[in-house]
Length: 384
Image (cartoon, rainbow, N blue to C red; front, side, top):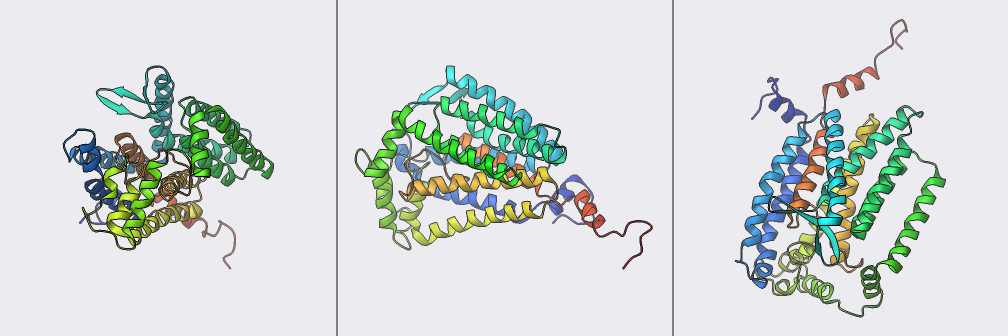
C-alpha cells in the first residue's frame, strides 16, 4: 500500500485518482476477457483458425490498453488537452488517408494497415474530438470574444464529413449525439439546439436515400423482411438464456452468430449467463455514466466539466447503441460494446477515453485550494 505521507508521483497518483472509476474500468475489461472465452472460439473455428485465436489476441490487446489508460491518467488537464489535440490531428489525417488506401470491409473504408496491424482511425478520433471541443466551448465561455463555438462547429463539420465519406453512419450518429450534448451543456441558445435537431433529422433522411445499405437496414428493422439472420439469431440466444443462462460454455445459438465476439457479445452473455447478468452489466455502465456526470456537475472548471461529461456520454451512448441492436430495439449497426467486445482499435481507443476521464477527475491540490478560497473571508471585510 502506498503511504499518504509519500510525495512521489506514484503516491500522488494513487491518492488523487478516482479509484472507483479505475476499478470499474478494469472490472469491465475483465468481464470482456471472460466473455471472449464464451464468444470467440466458435467464430475462430468457423473461419479456420485455432479455437483460442481471438482469446489470445484479446489478452494481447488488453496489456497495451491498460498501459495506455494508466499512463494517460497521470496527465494534468493541460497535458490531456495537448495530447488530445495531437491525437486528433493524427487521427483526422489517417481518416483522410483511409479513404484512398484503406481496407474495404462490407462496403466501407474504415481500416488502414500499419506495421501489420489493422487500425480504425475514427475510434481514436472520438475521445480526442470530445476533449478538443470541450476546450473550445470552455474558451468561448471564459472569453466570449474568442470564437470557440464557431471553431467547434467547423471541427464537427469536418469530422462528420469524413465519417460520412467512409461511410460510417453509426459513428456519425454517436459523434453528433455527444457533440450535441456538449453543445447543450455549453449554454447554447435553444434556437441553435433546434437547428441542430433539424439538421440531424435531415441528415438521417438523406442517408436513407443516399446510402443503399442504410436504407436496407432501416427497412429490415421496420418490416422484419429480408436477411435478418444475425439479428434473429441474437434474439434467439437471449431468449434461450432466460433469467440465469445456460451456464458457461453451454451456449449453442452463439455458435452461429457471425459477429458473436464483437457486435453481438451481449447476446452471448445473455445465453450463457442470463438476463440477470445482462441487467447487472447495464447497471454497471449506468453507474459509470452517472458517476462521470456527477463529477462534471461538481467541477468548477468549464473545460474539465465539458470534457468529463462528453467522454462518459460517449461511452454511455455507444453502449446504448450496441445493446439496443442486440435487443432489436435499433437497426443493425456494427458498433462494439465498450471495454467488453473484442477489437484492437476499439479497446485501445476506449482506454484512451478512460485514461482521459481518470486524469480529469483526479483530486488535485489546485482544485482543493480553489474550493477553500470560496469560503475565505476577503481581506478587510468583517466575518459574520
